[in-house]
Length: 389
Image 1 (cartoon, rainbow, N blue to C red):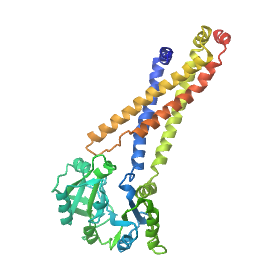
Image 2 (image 1 turned 180 degrees about the vertical axis):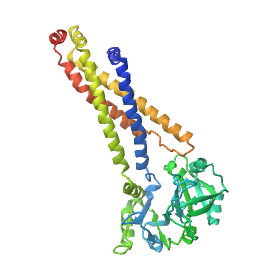
Image 3 (image 1 turned 90 degrees about the horizontal axis):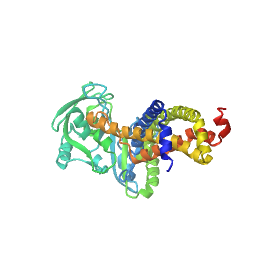
């Protein structure tokens, strides 16, 4: 753009005001980068090639309701179902109730349905032989400085054991890792798997019930038919089920706790609305202060369209500079917080989708806040402007 030097000079005409406005834009897009990464991370749960083959069956009433173990063999007999496993939420806390852990009590064949999760074969066999054994995500191992072979105490937030206390003890026999390039790495790294059989034997509150079933279909195109057939097994019974794809099931469970998309959208809506008012006021004031200068530009031959485009370019440049800096900071802070906390804080990276959405917002906000001042500058009457009217 041949008038870029003029746009740049106008942008930094009042340096203090410009830098304060840029700081506000940086803060807004820093928050956007961090929150949108979390939203995208939740949206991507279960959305991978392996996850597309899995169906999740849970209680139709609520995901905290349990289902009878006898349902597993009936699900396995349905056409297009090639494997079935089950799991139960255990919860658990380590040392401090604030250290809540994602701990599941699972069937021996649970990992057969999750090829995207890697476990050393020797460790997997050791886990199958040890009824009190646990497989722990790599980030969780680093977070608490655990080692394979260590015996650790956990406190269940829900289930007492056979002696009536909430204290349990487990042996770490292996480490869970997400396959390189696979999806769901952050969740796998923070996951703990224990034996369902031991869990069921040791807790008086578990009597042949499971939390949910996971099924793998042979033909993804017939998944809907398989889901309907599974739900038909328990229709009109005390244990009616709802079967969905893994991604849809995870989204449904999250919404029962909190609508992440709505929360993030509401926060960012408020932030960007405030940013629109702030940046719009800055641009209006900047153009108003340069009324006579704009009149001189028109006097020496600049067209009204040229003046319009320069004001719009100034507005968009300011928002883009601040927005790119904010998203860049979000990317750096996310990586630094994850690495520095040893996995205690696991912020998702700012991905391509967040960058593209952010750039679109920058351009849209720049156009919106620059439109009225630019139109005013375009319609400026030279005589009135030079006369100070």
